[in-house]
Length: 459
Image (cartoon, rainbow, N blue to C red):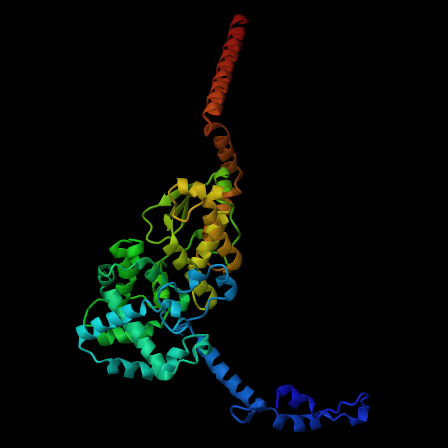
């Protein structure tokens, strides 16, 4: 019997209903509740709803904690036009894309590296399985959409975690193994930084502790592996070798966040609100000069000093695009996650409104374009800015944005900049203006001599 049948049966349904034939609210309650049954569990729907409310409140209590691991899906509206930025191309890690037949080719690579690890450590697979099986409930709860892989049984789930986790550990320990097999590393590396392709970091830590005697931290192995795409200085990576995170994407994201950053003076007031800044081409007209900061440790470290906007150089390519957009998806999907990358995206989206703005920053060596046309980069940042959100009263670029807007609202800076662009950027205008100035100066000198001569003659 369906829910709708149970609900409507108590009420008579002749063509004309007489008011006194209708049951009272009390009678409806007595008649309906026992008949609304959950056929699978043989309990009333009300009882089932009470059970679900209790389960949900427990889950929400866990989710409200900052340290709770939360691996979510990327919203379908974001994925729709950019599938391979968020979905794995060659390899599946974790349960969300487990069993995808398009990703079976690299499963052999997983088993090969697992064999190497077992041979190297002398450990037994059963030892790893026992530990992960004991953590299974906690691991499942780390995924917000656990219903999507509810068909994966307990043993199969533990096997997947052991295989994927030990594969990653051995890969980070000896990535040269892939180069020896002539495998294209680029799509593999990108896949490992996609939000839906993650396993909890505490799982990796547990497996790493069981399988290594190396003094290097797991974080340092992870950072050195992914930084082959960016080539940061070793001392920069060392600062993040003990950073904590939820998964690989979060660990790598946090290595770019300056935990000792000093806020700009403009961010001290609680009354300040983040306001949009002008595009790059208009800022130049207002007297702002753009310079590439080649000494910055992170692409997030933007500074504004004496009318100079110092922006670290970024190489916009497939790796950066994938990492960047998945960081934004992570920050938007988890309330306790800081929003530095999203804030940066919105700031750059304001600067790069058109292809002319991108061209300006490219000329100043701030953007190295591997995307193609300049308009593609402008679209890239503007799409993020339109769909993302940050706290307008509390973000790391608030003070800097306030300073830039104050600078551009100063009539002296703007006036000097307009004169400079009007007369000193064009050689012909510069020569004409210089000639006019010299003529005016000579005329003034001549008038002065004439006046002095007149007074001498009349003394």
